[in-house]
Image 1 (cartoon, rainbow, N blue to C red):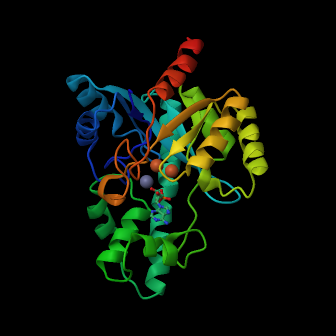
Image 2 (image 1 turned 45 degrees about the horizontal axis):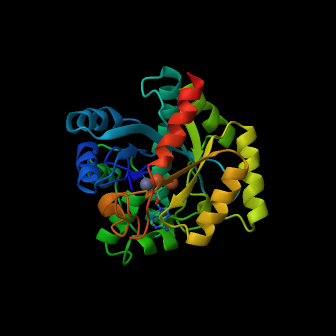
Length: 284
Ligand code: AMP
Ligand code: ZN
Ligand code: FE
Ligand code: FE
């Protein structure tokens, strides 16, 4: 069976592989297609597309936008976005500015707790890419303040953690509309992170997002149990939205997640790409 991975990160955000390396890893993993979906940036897409073309790998330009949400985390994936769309680039610039303001706030809170990390150290760790909490987590591990990245989030960086500072500035409606205007297909990322209490709550969130323009749901995902995946596919099909899937590969930043394979048993059928293409072709 042909398989793919529609959710990955590179050094343009908080992944550890360069866009080119990612394309080669996709080839080695025998994937039929790969999307690069860095957090709040399209900076890796030109390199990834060029490399993909040169080795004959199907590539889908994408992005993962953080949204404001009253509980849990809401991330929106945008597929086949026009990476040169000026309005979209302006939205990303606004989000990136919010990120840049947030990191010093987190560092100041850590400083108050007696842990000293500088922006320079973070910049070095991010090697030019978007700086995010995973970089701060790695710095905390390096300083010996925590045992591992998981503990760094648990103790300091998660919402409610001792050094947490909020970042997201886009409402779900703004994020969906920005993706649509840039010619992209808006897809709800990893719904488990919404932390809905019941299937009904989850369903009503997705119905609401559909009314705002959502066109797909990432049902197949590294952290979703088989039962949850089936539930999601059912909800998604009933609403006539596209079923997509991705591992959320971050390289060394999340060593337990393998490209295209997640924690080992993940399989993302190529039909997910075909569903996205059907939506794209319907438009043109
Ligand atoms: P940011 O974009 O700075 O808000 O950071 C988001 C990144 O942090 C995503 O890649 C998440 O996967 C990662 N992340 C969030 N919570 C945790 C956690 N508990 N352990 C490890 N990584 C996490
Ligand atoms: Zn990430
Ligand atoms: Fe995400
Ligand atoms: Fe992600």
